[in-house]
Amino acid sequence: MFYIDHMREMFENRFGNLKAFVKTFGCQQNESDSEKICGFFRDIGFSFVDDPIFANLIVFNTCAVRHTAQDRIYGHIGMLKSIKRVNNNIFIIICGCMVELESEKNKILSKYPYVDFVCGAKSFEKFPELLYEHLTGIKIEENYSMSVIQKDKFKAWIPIISGCNNFCSYCIVPYVRGCEVSRKFEDILSDCKKYISNGTKIITFLGQNVNSYDYDGMKFKDLIYEVDKIDGDFTIRFMTSHPKDFTFSLVDTLAKCKHFSKSLHLPIQSGNNRILKLMNRKYTREEYIEKIDYARSKIEGLVISTDIIVGFPGETNEEFEDTISLIEKVRFFSIFSFIYSKRNGTLSATMQDLTKYEEKAKRIDRLINIQNKISEELHSELIGRNFRVFVEGISDEYLMCRTDSNLMVKILNGKNNYEIGNVLYVKIANSGRNALYAKLLEEI
Ligand code: SAH
Ligand code: SF4
Ligand code: F3S
Image 1 (tube, protein in one colour):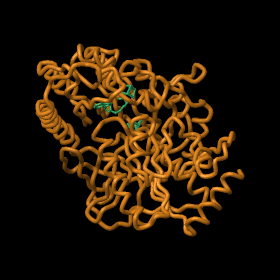
Image 2 (image 1 turned 180 degrees about the vertical axis):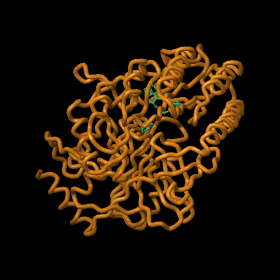
Image 3 (image 1 turned 30 degrees about the horizontal axis):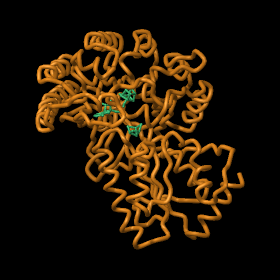
Image 4 (image 1 turned 180 degrees about the horizontal axis):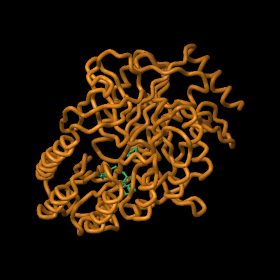
């Protein structure tokens, strides 16, 4: 396409040597978008560096889900000032969810004038055309389809549904990502076939609520069922599931699928029904527990994790204790817990919130301590068991691996020349709070 060639020329003339640094904040959806941004910049001639100092193009793909996430990003944008001072020619792009918020976009443009181009998450598919318009003033009607650079060859993120219709009262995501749009069933299937035939071992379906996938009547369980039929050695994961749409019949399908990873991330958010109602989550504690019990009864070895928000406006200590009793009852392998963060524009931002931050911090500490003990116990119950694992990272000391079900396994690095993506068979010898320690079966 002429404008892609034209951009290549413009950047070549500007920099000579095309080096890009891309940093991603936020969730897997953003990771997946960044893989496309990288694919696009590769197509116009860039290679990638690990340090912004060596780059002449810098991209930050941002997240707006909590204040802490935003503050961190502003810290990073602030640091670019000194890089720009050394190299005024550098081109800085801030894109993603944070830029979708008018207030933050204006703040970036006014307080950080060295930022060259911004592009919000909702306009992401038009990123190449918007960049071209920014550079030349010329509007383009076509749409360049961005191909993906897989960060790890053995893993593929596959977005199946974008946006979110749920409007949980605390959450900014529906505002920055727009409403739900399911991708074409056939396109997802052909992506899967392509990745699997190229040696990808872990397919992760992405969406803010994968369970509401619906393309022309084809539902999430139909998708999983069809992908499971593909020949090859691969594992299917997906995130995130919404408990209200996570159905018994989906569990029945998963139980039949030989490629299902047996890992499930099912955010509960709170163990108290009044708070769940205020959060607009549309399920009760009892319904949640019933679904977990059913899933566990059908799928042996299922590893379940969750998200919890502590200190939602008006949450009393007793109501928080319901969350504690829930995690003690369900016994998750791991929990991602967050102190409630007020996001302007959401419904809960208008709710009275009198609980002090220190009190919320105490609550989350209590939650984390109790969970740590549960995680430790659940991991230790796996000592002596055998697993198949993927090598995900290699340090001097350990091969960092994951089971199909996404549990972390560390193996002492015997300098056996293993590579990232290798499949190993191991026996669990020891355990910690967040990881298992294993020996290679062939060495036992
Ligand atoms: N779509 C997913 C994930 C959304 S964001 C889901 O429905 O679960 C990831 C997590 O961030 C949420 O599960 C929630 O626990 C947390 N989160 C979202 N908004 C938040 C807020 N305003 N304050 C604190 N945590 C929040
Ligand atoms: Fe946010 Fe709720 Fe949508 Fe998840 S389901 S992205 S928490 S609104
Ligand atoms: Fe953050 Fe956007 Fe994901 S707000 S959590 S990066 S969808």
